[in-house]
Amino acid sequence: MDAIEEVMRYRIVVLGDVQQVGFREYVKKCAQQLQAKGSVKNLDDGSVEIYCAIEESTLDKFKEMIGKPPMGEVEEIKVYPEGSGEYGTTETNFSKFKVIRDEDEVAETLSVMARAGFQMLEKQDKMIELQKLTIEKIDGVANKIDGVSGKIDAMHQDMNERFDRLTENINERFDRMEVKYGAISEAIKVFLEEFRTFNAKLDEHNRKLDMIL
Image (cartoon, rainbow, N blue to C red; front, side):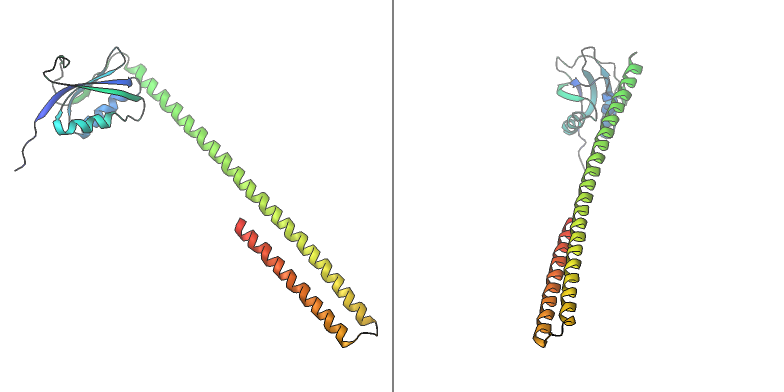
């Protein structure tokens, strides 16, 4: 049969940017997850005071959780066990965990909403900047593709001109009655060599285009 672990009571003081950032609600959520009982409230010096009844082995986990709030920043967590001079007195009955609110609660709620709104605006600005960078990269790729296309067009024009000149040369030789078999054979060799060169250049440009895309 598992032994029942003793529940201890502590006074915890949290220092840092922990007021008007929704920190007390976050502490309550953490306490409920760990089945801790007690209360949390703001102090006049800007810190937050927590009274909680919690299993001793769970205390470190509770400190770790409240030390990483979604908003604000925790600088230091002080823990005073019941019976110590710094524990003080409390009206908390430890039947549940509650948030002790004061007259400034409305102001805190509005402040939390404002901070959340500013964070959303900052994220939106970052998303817009990321979209701009993405568009610039796409434009850069498009410019490279246009450049390659221009080179391919120029190559095609050059090869067409060479082919036309080669055809004219062959026709001229046939128009002359001095054409011999050896001359015809040489013309065919030149034609085949030009055709092989054309295919090699075309394959090379296609390979470069595939690398860019």
